[in-house]
Image 1 (cartoon, one colour):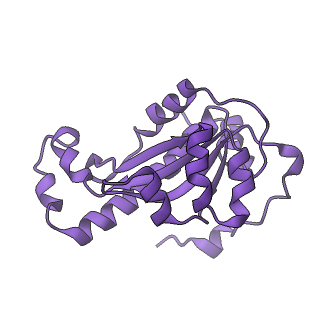
Image 2 (cartoon, helix red, strand yellow; image 1 turned 120 degrees about the vertical axis):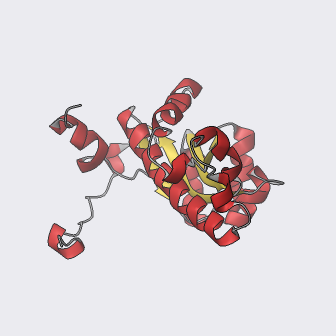
Length: 195
């Protein structure tokens, strides 16, 4: 495999932005499936794949989400064609016999609540990042955010399960005319060391 070209670096990272305003353009269900079919190949510990995603798209689903959003996130989320609830399953280890068949990985987690919670959150967050990269790679813009009542979202979308919401990501085609200038980032020497 070769390295990314400059155009792909721009698409995924350098020119990718967090969007808060959206064009009125539908995101087809087939494209949502394609995002997942790319992101699922990202690495997770023991191939645990704990991420679970609810795509909030219909007016009825948006109405269920709305009361659980912080006030500053309501307008942009209701305007977004799709809001993905990026969550993680605290019973992910039950699928390890299927996902990691060459070892008894289920036994590493079963009964260890602290390890389950830590691993599900860490690896589900990784998958959330893969999700955004996949969406951008397929031509969509992302608006990831916190700023919601996780308990309310859980009750509205994941009741009677051990799936826990992590963050929300609005998806669609962003309105670039209202973007602010890009905020600065830390330089390599401010954030990294080579030991």
